Length: 172
Ligand code: ADP
Image (cartoon, rainbow, N blue to C red; front, side, top):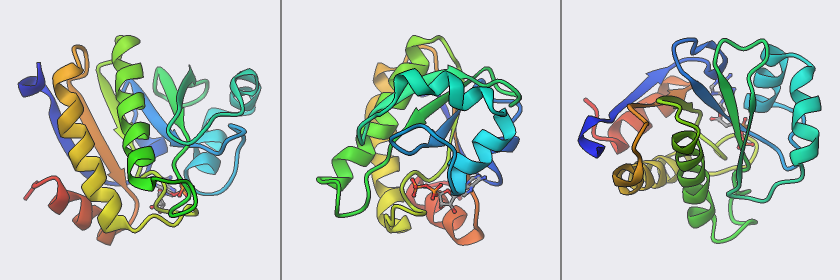
């Protein structure tokens, strides 16, 4: 049902997307709180999130796991571990796995609206332009396999990241 999926890029905060069923965490392997997105999500969801995640840790680059959202306004949180750029290799395939596995997991869980941050582009050092191209490619290639997802939103923190993703997705 790929023609029915809406793709959006917005500038904003991933913890402030109350209209989405599920948001994706740029997690660390231990599924603990941290800097960047992981810190923001764990602060917003509250301490029960770390407790719920503990039995699922550690995860490998490209993996995606799901938890309740606790104090966040969404139904669920998907945690995916991005590759450390040029350390976890091949970085482009592992980054693509993050998006593919997160989308397939959300779809299996019958969630219809999903939000992503720019995975790996913070502490993990992935150049934003390259990350945006991988994201656009993998999202388009996986769409035909999604049956429940109706909206995929990329939530970019900075105005330059927002412009880069919009361009990669061909959004004016
Ligand atoms: P990684 O460790 O996968 O690189 P980070 O959390 O360090 O993940 O950063 C990923 C991207 O998310 C960076 O571009 C960063 O600027 C951005 N970011 C940080 N906090 C937020 C937030 N609250 N909402 C959306 N994006 C965020």
